[in-house]
Amino acid sequence: MHEERVGLFGGSFDPIHFGHLILAREARESLGLNRVIFLPARVSPHKLDRPPAPAEIRLEMVRLAVAGESGFSVDDREIRRVGVSYTIDTIRELAAEFPGVTEWVYFLGDDNLAKLDTWREIEALRSLVKFVVLAREDVTSHPDLPVIQRVVDISSTEVRKRVAQGRSIRYLLPEDVCALIARNGLYRDE
Image (cartoon, rainbow, N blue to C red; front, side, top):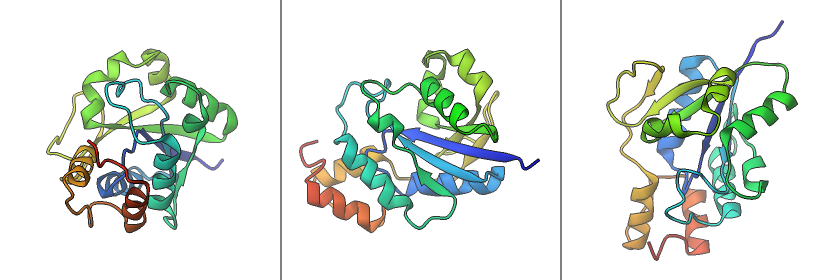
């Protein structure tokens, strides 16, 4: 029987940048994943303090960023879902739709690691996915979870600040995503 291992990369992607893409590629190759599915969230339960860019525009940014990248795809179920996006709901839906997947690997940003125990139905979630930490800084190990690391000094927060300051974001994210941000006037008032 063919074993299919799929990586899941959820997040606000506000905006998606090369740090996300570099780490996703590194994880896919290092872990031998068949594919990686990006899951942009309409409303992240851990980022309720700051309203993100419109969900449909963030979804389009992710689609533009992964276009033409073999092994990467985008799933819009969390954008279509009304209200807060909970990972447990998404995993249950995906597992039911794709029974041939033998292992779900959920990428967890190192910035979200401290909040993991607060995730909805975390124990049920741990039984359904293997968590892997994606680290953009020097976090060479974690006592309980595997770590994929590439030192990448790019963050969505930095991109938003640079746009608000009128500074260039070129080389931080794909050109098509830069153009979409400019066309929609995003992040100018941060």
